[in-house]
Image (tube, rainbow, N blue to C red; front, side):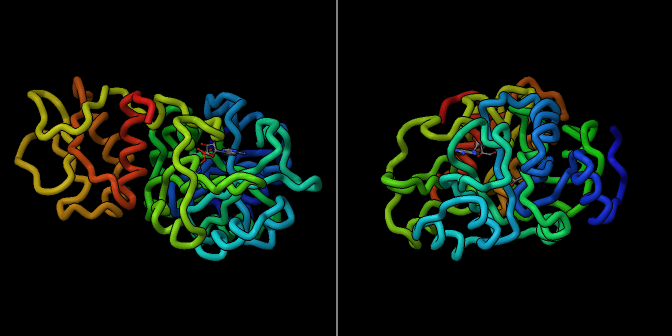
Length: 312
Ligand code: TXA
Ligand code: MG
């Protein structure tokens, strides 16, 4: 299948209704979308990504009303949705008995991950379809998430019947995944575009991290990875290495700047595209400057540790 260039929203909705896949811009990263209820399309989506079927997908909704039809949201989930939707927050909540989300999309779990994206094209496509869309990041499994249409097409364009161009992603990191499940304190399953402190400001302290992979099947140790090995917390590149800088950097060749001024939001928006750019030079390794751990730095460091193959 070849993606139609510059399709309309209606044409893209038609591709989905016919069981096809669509490359979809969101404000976090590009996704590869399918109808959440369509078991066959979802199976093809897993295949296109080379994704293990035990790793469930995020279901994208237009708003809280659509979310309430799919799942049982408690007061914490509703407060977080009110504060951060549309936006870079995913809620893992108990699935409703009537929900039109196929088993495969949930990897058989009794929970579902829900997000209302902010990007106008994502909103328009969900509205045109009138049903939830699953959309994992549009990369092949284990690779950096695409933050431009060109990167998305290079990863999974072969499997898409249409691809929407929404420009470069403003956030550049995937959503923060928060579990709000009965009888358990809310916890972050994946740090992302909404910082921990912002979430705690709405619902109070979160459960401490229970170690890697707890409750989130998709947290593989090596993930988001370019081809070249990464060397983290490097103050300067070694000869031949590419260097991903944060803050003022010397004039070394193959230096890629996350943020000259040390702005974490700017660094997040550039992270994946700079990993690709550094990798394209085929260096023996990519050295990465230290990034502070506060705010969006938690998610940036999480992605870097995984791209380097360390369990975070
Ligand atoms: O920003 C994003 O979240 C992007 C855009 C396209 O929306 N999507 C994305 O999807 O990153 P994906 O499939 O690459 O990551 C989904 C994450 C995985 O870590 C998965 O394990 C977790 O959400 N997840 C999904 N359903 C879950 C569930 N029922 N319980 C626990 N974790 C779940
Ligand atoms: Mg992903």
